[in-house]
Amino acid sequence: MTSFSIGETDFLRAGLPHQVISGAIHYFRVHPDQWQDRIRKARLMGLNTIETYVAWNAHEPRRGEWDATGWNDLGRFLDLIQAEGMDAIVRPGPYICAEWHNGGLPNWLTAGERELRSSEPTFLADVSDYLRRVYDIVAPRQIDRGGSVVLVQIENEYGAYGSDKDYLEALVALTREAGITVPLTTVDQPTDRMLADGSLPELHKTGSFGSRSAERLATLRSHQPTGPLMCSEFWDGWFDWWGGVHHTTDVDTAAADLDELLAAGASVNIYMFHGGTNFGLTNGANHKGRYLPIVTSYDYDAPLDEAGNPTAKFFAFRDVIAKYAPVPDELPAAATAAPVFSVPLKPAGSWTDAAASTPASAVPRTFDELEHLSALVRYDVELPEGRGGQLVLDEVRDLAWVSVDGQPVGTLSRTRHDRSLRIPAGRTLSILVEEGGRVNYDHRLGEQKGLIGAPALDGTPLTDWHSTALDVAGIAAEIGFSGGNTSSGPGSTPSAWVADFALDSAADLFLDTVAWSKGYAFVNGFFLGRYWRNGPQRTLFVPAPATRAGDNRLIVLELEQLLAPTADFVPALALGDTEE
Image (cartoon, rainbow, N blue to C red; front, top):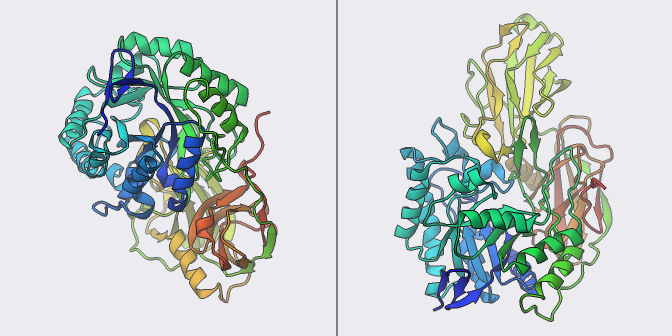
């Protein structure tokens, strides 16, 4: 067994001074069959540690339905880290931010009126149940029990949210009671208020920043006179949102900032070493006056790109690390072009016209009231006396397609702050609402989704709404099973499409979505995620384990219009224009 502790100036591993040189890989953003490859490449860059968040909503999307298998097999991920001869840092939250849906908190947890991230008893009881399950996995894998885990973090950037010391103390007590014996840390941006509010005297403070290292370390030291300095989120890139640009950071500048950190003797966790992908509907959103949903790619301009290939930043960071720690002679293989081909998409009919599945209600029911975890709810109401007029909504969360008697009228966007639309006379008003990703930061966590409030026509409330939940993945599975043989023609909107293609062997693929508008894509039932011509992201990453030698099937659920009914697979990632 090996010990890991905090000394006067350094981390002590087996009693000797130790500089943690870590990189972040979120197991829930990487196909499990590719975990080992990404971990190994981290070691080849010179890292000695892997850090991961734990996403509560991935493990327990519905209350009581806990899952720690497959994609959620945190234990296996930690074991693979140990098998590579590396240490692990675990950050279980419960809140993680991470540009992840709802900041990692399950919808069922945040749907009520309880005070989040606080010592409020019912919230704390649910958090305690969650953390005990996580620590059942982590505790036997601590370094002093022969495992890989050397640090566990309490909460996450809490100083940017609150200052409830009773909450932090309860988390610490529970963590220790659950058998966690390694040092406990907190992380905050290095400002006086955040560092003071976000930690406790018995917890080791670390910082999150991506530049001006000396200045930030000095601020951190002023709040913590002894112990090792650590930047546990060294931001080497940034995330993207729909309608923005693809963010990159200058390689030489990022390498110089890393050099400054390591030269100061500080430990570091590079955020991200490998970002991966927001597969399915797992992307979060930011809202600082304007709702901005995160794209499917979480490439982050990291040393290892979204597809797991080394970038120029990988080799620049490797050269810096080699000045301070041993780096293996072996290099990872360079990226190779993926198979390039095009296949026609066959129309498979409409897919959002399911019969109303719920009794009528006076006002539209939210996603949360429906306990709906997928992306779409369709709202239908009979227009009084068949008349049209000015439709006014309290709020749409997050994007709505409005039609009357099946004929499109227009869209309403939360990002654009839309609330009103003139509609023609007709019998039935239908509003298809997409939940574009739950806000993952600050005090909008857990906000309700769907049509909010009571829609009105020319000032008169519309009543007797049918709210029909649409399970995107379930619909795709039905189409995939049937082969897309439906009676509806290609003119219907939204429309489903099917393409079959053959591969000589399983392979990473890059699906170009530039000729499509907005929707969701699946390969062999694997949910690749969202696409949107709003950009910047142009390709969807198809991990090799989702493909197979021989026949493969692509399902596309288009919400608007395909510009061309083809599926083009291209040689490499295309993540959009940068600011340069």
